[in-house]
Length: 58
Image (cartoon, rainbow, N blue to C red):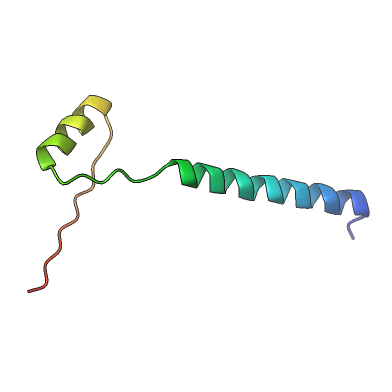
């Protein structure tokens, strides 16, 4: 099985991975916009895609 050093190393790597993922997720927030024209022009400038969400409660 694992010895004490291997367990500590594995736990350290796991902890570092979790912290890195959480820090990255917190930094990458979704930027919502109410203006289609503004969003399309910003997407064209930055080269990033946009997502449009439509909803109705007919």
